[in-house]
Image (cartoon, rainbow, N blue to C red; front, top):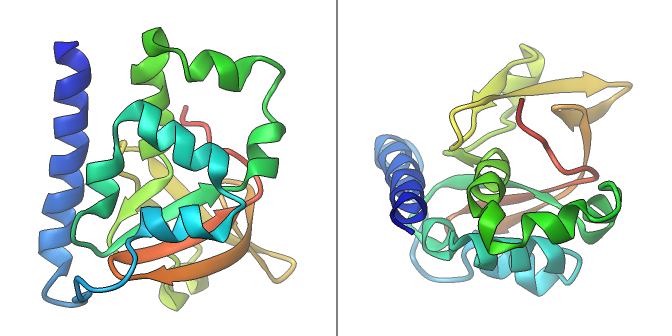
Length: 167
């Protein structure tokens, strides 16, 4: 149990430290819905919302931003091999679930026009690099196609058509 608490604390600290650094450039007001609430309210991120709750990452995603979450849709989770999602949601796999979910979160604003022009990426809260690219005029993040984006009080929810799996 202590490792899980330490993992959650490390994720929250990473998100908050990145948020503090970018707060001077981009300030989001506290009013309105945070990225987690926006994802829940859209209706096609129910699996993601459940996974976030199982992983205990709600506080990190409702903190002051900005933060960008690359949110796999329910259909994206359905593409996982049979039984994989169910296995990830088990208590004994919580560390793996946290690693996967934090791979979807970028502290700060991601996918800015300059990032795409330079085919850059961003560092996820997990510590891994995400690669952004334009493929036939469509934005991709680590190969997953961006299908929409939604503004939130503390950042942006970017819908993707696949679950991003860290190396």
